[in-house]
Structures are given as structure tokens and as C-alpha cells.
Image 1: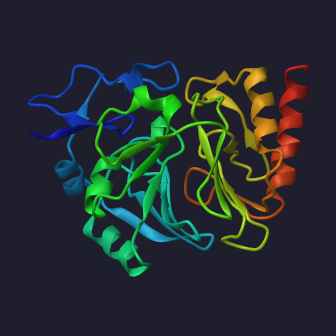
Image 2: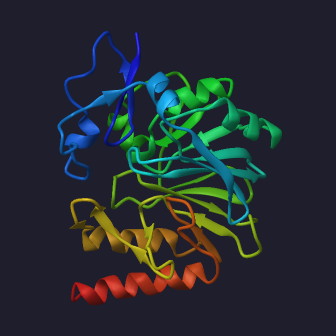
Length: 268
């Protein structure tokens, strides 16, 4: 039986004899059902329709779907002292992508920031030899294709090594996670925040939204909590959720200024 993939958000669901009647990810107020109604595809069909862009995004091996599909995120391979981490995930796995990853030493674990990017995480894990998938336990309910590879972490900070930490930023989803890599990929370290906070299009600020497509701002209390959780971490770069959306210098100052801008805008 196929594991159907939602055409709008790109999330792969558990195998069923027929397409599911609903995509709970899209029916949630942070996302939306496509304007043509709920539609489904499969991984095999995606493989016929799409290819992956494979290249480097500000020094890191990166992957993204070519053509319009799903949310449009890209995944990054992070060669850290915690092992090779695939940060974020896509709805499509290709032999070329697996070959590119193996040429860099493979993947030790997949880490994903939040449910909108869970996509075909189990498909990727299986293609990479069954590597573990690390998610925050607060978002357990949004796992649409449960698997033994999925592991949950808890708390606000989880150190994966001396230089790699996961930070529960919250706000967008309860378990929205940023990855902090103090030792790389360039001097000054980097933050990989997913959508919470999200690197803005001007690549000089960050945004704080509960729903980006439906324009629902994040609650001030959640933004305050995020600021406190990020305060101890220094970083000179911030890698956004899609190709090229990166702050390449002075990222910590840019995020701090964005917190101030947010509270100024809401009058708090």
C-alpha cells in the first residue's frame, strides 16, 4: 500500500489502501487546505514529476525540490562533532541525493525543526539505512507516519555534542526547534531556526508568526520566552528555511534587533 503525500504541505502519511480523507496538518489554522481541495500524491509519482536541486547554500550541502510543490523548504547536511546531521527534510528522496550524502560520509541522524517540515522523513531515514529521526516530544501528535526511527527529546535544550545544541523555541509550534552549531560551519557559529524565528526576506531580520500563510502573529508571551531561550547562544550566521534565505554576518544582533522591532510594533 502506498504512503500518500499531501500535495499542499508535502507531509507523508502512513500506508493506507486509499488516500486519507483529511490532512490534519493542513486543516490546522497554521496551514491551509489547497484551493482545489485536499489532494494527494505518492513518492513514486513525485519521483516521476520532480527532481531535487543539489548544491551548496552558503557552504553547506543542500537539497530542495525543483518546481512548485509543498512549502518549499530545503534540507542541509551539517558535518558536526555530533555526527553528520540532516537538518530538515523533504517530500522526495532521489538516488542522486543519497549518493551526494554518502560522498560526504552519510547521515547519522535527521533533526527537524517543526511539523510542517516532517514531510517524508521516514522515507529519507529508510533510504539512509534507518537512521534515527529526532523531534521534540511536544509535537508528537503531528507525526503522520509513525516509525521506530522516530525519537523524541524533551525540555528546552538538548546538547548533542560539545558544540551542537537543540533549543525549543516554541511559538510557531509548541516544540518548534532551532539548532545551534557553535563551531561551524564558519567562524562565529550558526543558528538554524526553521520557522521560529523565521529569517525574513530582507535577510537582515527575523519574523515571529504563529501562522505565516494565514498571517497570525505569534503571542507576545511566546516571543518573550523565545528570546530568553536564545539569549545564551552566540551565532554570526542564521540559515533560513529555504535556499539563500540566510543572514551571513551579524545574525545574533539581527535577531535581537528583530525582537525589539516586534515588541515596538505591537506597542509592548
